[in-house]
Image 1 (tube, rainbow, N blue to C red):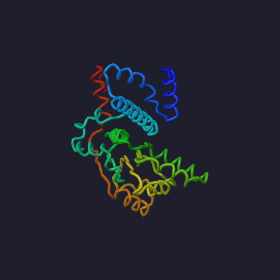
Image 2 (cartoon, helix red, strand yellow):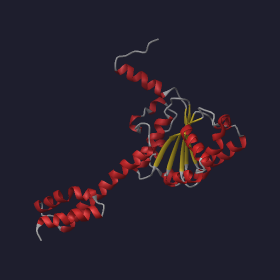
Image 3 (cartoon, rainbow, N blue to C red):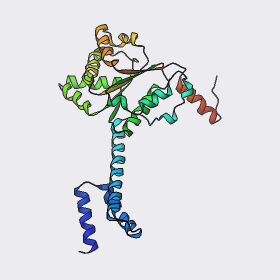
Length: 258
């Protein structure tokens, strides 16, 4: 058989086996193997390595898109000196994703602008790199979707759709009263109990969660599930966003108008 026939067959095999990474590089790898007198096993190993790398990159891109982060934030961009009480080793340990494997939760608690959302996104991105599926959603958006799903009699199906995510990040709990959405948020969290991890950012101490749920019994039940095998991070400091704004203004030569 001629080389063109073999090439055509490889193209078909790669397409049928869904190996786009191998399809892109096999020709170059074959030339490299001939030029360097590689063994068939070396050539095969190189082909499989390229396909594996391609799949990992594709998965990373897909999972990152599915996460729906509002921005890309990493720990490399975070100024840990702005909140000295925040344990950097603890955050980096969470970024390894073991808490997700163990179905544990994280609560980031502190004032507005102290970096809670930044840290939550950083943990989420690190989790994706470790192979976990993540979804970021503001609490009020989730409440609206839960209410709509309930009104359309598809709440059980909606809740099941979240089972595919290993970590759900609920951002900004406590800024707005949940009203009739409180029981639905409880149901959402209870449904994930010991099935998947939740990371919540909130500006309220636990004692004040009744201010947004308006039901002491429900709030106690939620905290009981949420804090069981959980990690509590307290963001005790001045506004991180304000400090970053000042830093950027200084770097561009712009002062703050008094």
